[in-house]
Length: 479
Image (cartoon, rainbow, N blue to C red; front, side):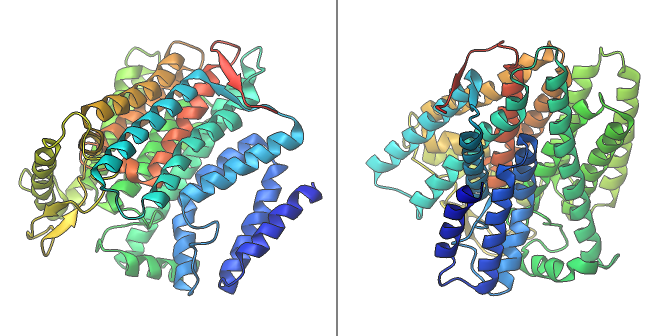
């Protein structure tokens, strides 16, 4: 064990040369934590991935505010954290002689994902129109599906030899508890930041962090915490997705699990209010509606309806408290601005509707947002502001078909659970994908490392649990 940690320590010392002392300390602590994770359970690795995905943006902010640079450290972003956890998983498996099994659905999704971005890169090559920093963008984008392998190995791997269903059921509850707790902590933190921002509460020990987040924000009055690198619209989607996924399985558990489910719902609603996000309202509403439809014939239909009525009543009350500028309006400045951008994107797509305009074209500042009160103060370049349209612009009809296949593969993992003993897990994944899918209409949420990492991770975990007991062919990586 010590011998395995020495190479990691040597790499850490090498990377810290020329770095800020505080960054070096943080890096060494991260390496020590990684060594500890090698001896930890697979469930601990899963929890570390989710916790790191949520916490790392705030840690980056702390490092940069103290004069350090996180570019060369493990804190460079969620993508690098996924790589670290994946590397720890591989090292752990090699040291213990364990196998990493990939269900066929995960393999299929990975192949389609690679085909999609290979197509977009080829188009960009022939157009000689690579966006700035293409290399780093590709490296980051490759890390997202690694989260599916982590999910399949950490959550599903512990139940692959299950014979009576109990190991699989415990794996489901562990996953739901981690997701529900993460949603609860992140949602309440977002609300705490908003309350501090408006002078209602003290930040306590987080005064410095909250101050730095407030200074870095370009969204006055709206919470961006704890996912400070993303917009409020994207940050709240992460919280809603975790809550939507965790609540159905938690309601099947103990009294404490049901309490955690209620906390996750409350936290998600609080985060939507704190971020003043109309995208968050839509995502939460769609997830709740899908939950109702999937449970309408369930024996606990009355309890489901009561919970939904309470949720709707709370949402309506919270909506009445929102500033008038953040309420739903047909002529809302941000909606009008998006419509103008979408028209430009459709026009550009006409240049090559079959194969699109190439890798990451839609994410660049290639569309002009006109100046308008309540939107941009001056005309500025913007991304396409819609995941579906962005995929169509980048890859054309061919790329969009591949993207739809990826979405269908995610849904197939959920569908495989709906008719079995772990139905609540399938319901949770469908609710999460419904909420994220609704948010993708008006926001490029999969461009966020946090959203993509969590969606791929949870998909991998559910797909692996669906393959428990030899129900699905699988392949094993070499020992």
